[in-house]
Length: 147
Image (cartoon, rainbow, N blue to C red; front, top):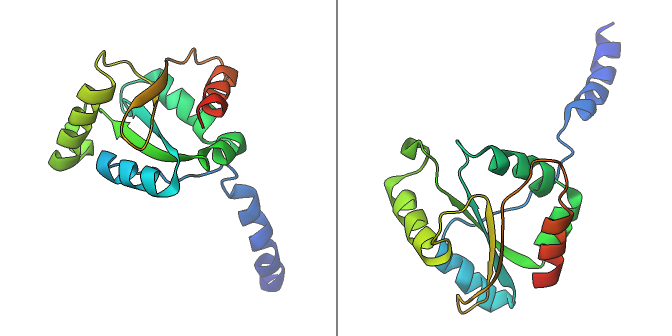
């Protein structure tokens, strides 16, 4: 019986693994610009309110956790800028940094916001909002257009 359990355990774990894609987001603007120059890629800046913005939370699941996004993300340097209501979610240094980037690239304070900047920090394009319907075609087209 123990042998059977031992043999079935890996199959049970396979069914519970997370099959969504994962990508690495930088959290420092200057580093993202530096990598952008080095790799000759645009920077995709994602502004979110991770603990208070329902469209941001839904977009995370509907877009950022997909294989299609994972593929498109290879064409970008990714920068994650979180502006949570609970400031304890970030270090003071990260909070101050995110506020600076917000003032520079998201003056209206729109969430969620995707902004594309080049290696010189020049804003090229942006796309704001999410209707929470599961329709991510506009976001994917935005990403395809700006890579």
